[in-house]
Length: 297
Image (cartoon, helix red, strand yellow):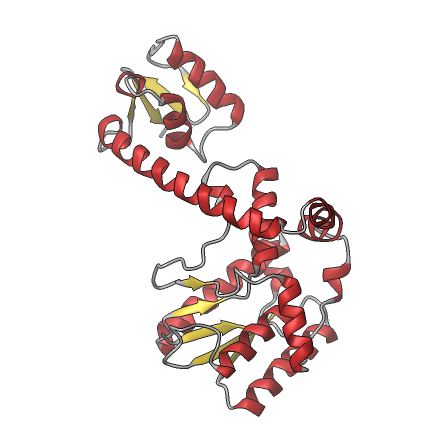
């Protein structure tokens, strides 16, 4: 596998780069690697210093480097999205371009076990189904935007210990120690409490996410089979056929996910439970016609 490593200069990505350099990052890493660095132009001289640091590391180790600068604030304003989402869209779009142009098999990102636990909690706080409780995937397995996460089984503490013992350098992002976003609030205030209650909470979370991933696979299979019975070629959901399934309420939630809010779904479930499939009844972006639920328009 020929990997493109997403390296910011922070401790996690530098750990990934150093491990790749010494050949211990992944058994599949047999065709070499290159580094991609994004300067999001959000922290002024600090962002530029990160770029210089990664550039020097690559030059000193003979590693190919791709780097770019984004006008992240302008992009976020133009598209009406958060800075975090803008940075995500910009970097992953660029990564796809690099993989296509230079033949990289996948992009490796440095999400670790702590990041995965934080993501699980954030998803739960936002309101998510079983899929959102599975955590991040170690390998998305899709092309042309295949993402691998070789550090998901490694904690932030293990990474720091290894880097300090080796005497390797990295860049510190001062915003990581500031309570300025939800993830940092979890990291600085909530996770220490979990650690106090259960010092092995990361392993516990990882095991639970693995089990939930298996449950989600079963649910996906169930939904796929039910969809073949209940959903027509036009995308309409036959509510009478749906009612024949034992877990029809869950199916209705999955089939309308992303379109109906909690209140709309509750009203729809009540209507279906009572067997009221009267034409013309509207539920958010859906309308019932001849016993079938269809998206309006």
